[in-house]
Length: 179
Picture (cartoon, rainbow, N blue to C red):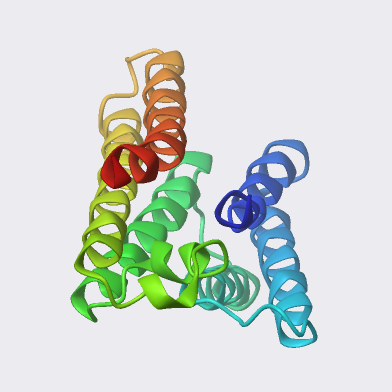
């Protein structure tokens, strides 16, 4: 559940972006990210996570730029920046040798398993699947920007399938890995 809650800023962004506008959507994403960070800082059982910190920096930075710079971004242009930022966060966690899913898994797995090769491998695999899902989102955004004649539903379908697949894989793979 924790990993899915980490995507709440992206949901807030998507809803507010559609209803009000891009800058407001970015600000909403930053506000929800900040709320998650505050929750973690004041919780005895949680700690701020790389994904949540990166998400806050992404939304706050884009919102600040949108307010100060006043760019003329299209809806798809903003989505591309957000999705590419999310992909970059995931790639950074892998490059640092700390797959973002590991922090969430540690909240559910006994501490004595954290150093095991299986635990590490499982988190690399799951993070890799999320990386692939976010790459699909970026690709769908690029297609919709550079091929405007394509119906937007193709991008929506690709996005939903990529995220649904990553969610299902995340819930399925740990049990399969243990077996």
